[in-house]
Length: 307
Image (cartoon, rainbow, N blue to C red; front, side, top):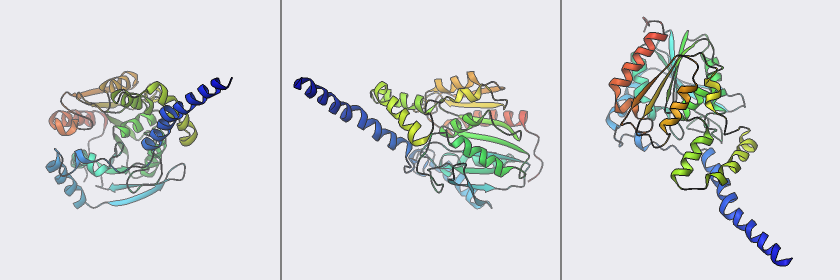
């Protein structure tokens, strides 16, 4: 019997080294606080001049940094630009990003079109608290807390989420207050699990072995099921939606946007920018995206006359 124990011990060691260990390391790398990856949206990136001007425009405007406490006690911060308008856009950035990099150009567009701005810094990013990002799962409750903060400050709300921010909006889409009149979901995924599955396939990693362990860790560490689908909420939403997607997106497959759109029970439209990469549709074809945004706003929001 001794050789059998040696064989079992060898397989156990190989499992720990090749599967269990990498799965644990990958989980904590993905879901722990990490430094932002903002090279694409920096002053030195391909959109540097435009984004630098947009950031300068925003920083010159009067605004205040506000802090709230999330449902689980995590401190969250955002910058609020009160343009004395009756409507506000809430902007939610993506994974390992920050609002003033990824969403600066969109923020300027909305401000110039009669919206107050609430630029959220998501949990485990920037100045907001939290050790762990959950890629939209706990963030959905954070969004609802921010909407409670806006209660009484604005009569109409537009949600604009990009990538993880779009997933956050989608997860909350069946629980939004009546003040939310529209939502824009830019290249959002259908679940953290689906996104990790795609990442594993791109890197030729054994997803069938790694992801079940990462899912168990999510249930234990995050108290969330990373396989929870955004489509489950979208099929019960009544909030009109505008889906934005880059056709050349290699980070979030365009098929995930199509799944979200197909599940969405509310009135919805899709804007596809064929040449756009991940989170760059607004920058790669601003004329088309702005035209669709303007039509969406005119259809679902009252005309803004004050500034």
